[in-house]
Image (cartoon, rainbow, N blue to C red; front, side, top):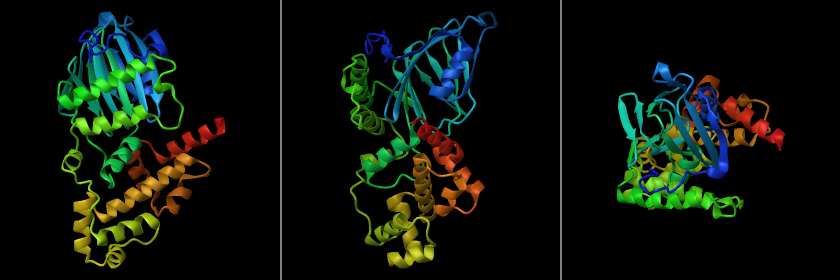
Length: 341
């Protein structure tokens, strides 16, 4: 996606400038607000105080686009918190060596990288590095995949970290992405519409899920979303979704389903991709998350108990693992947003 390679003919997001020629402290602040909290340092003592950065940001529903350029030094970037969303990085100039534990990937003219939730990354940016981030909210992408599959996504989507942009499917997706970037330069373009549904975010999520390999790719490519489920499994799933906070022992689920416990567990593994217990927790967490986002409640425990969680530390841990933040943080954010409105 390099500018020199012709994919982009000019600097993106020119109308959405946030910071220009700022120091590392301000760059860390923008990363904390727009991307993921991190520490940034120069890789040369001679370059201390010389590094500068420029940042532009815009949001399209659950999708955020961030352009950043750094000059004056090679830089080391170390995440200080797990990634909570999906972050695709494109190199427009220079290179970025990305590492997550023992896995490494190079972000360059023909290679992008994607970070999935729960990853803690380190990066090495070359001097003069320019990048474009495509950040997608975790809950939005998982729900989008559920609509494509017509089944629950009970575990995070885990993408292959390196993206070969010369592959036909990704190359096609990139051509559409370029159209979006051109559209963003037009104040009255399609991306400026405020109709409640943004066509660009749906396109970006669908294309990414189809074009880049991840742990659900086989279900998509093999057509396992044909909607078929044994009737016994459907009865159990309907009970869970109708009464998620109720008594949902394996014995009760099996009785409602009309099959034995082992058969029901096998159906869940084969057609839902998880165990009955994990699916129950997934539904309860989703209901609690939706209510926390809506605000209007006084405490996290009130919501947790309402949706069947009786052990608060376990609820908080499971919630943070799924959504990347503690439930109290979601409640504070929703309450603050309500007060502003």
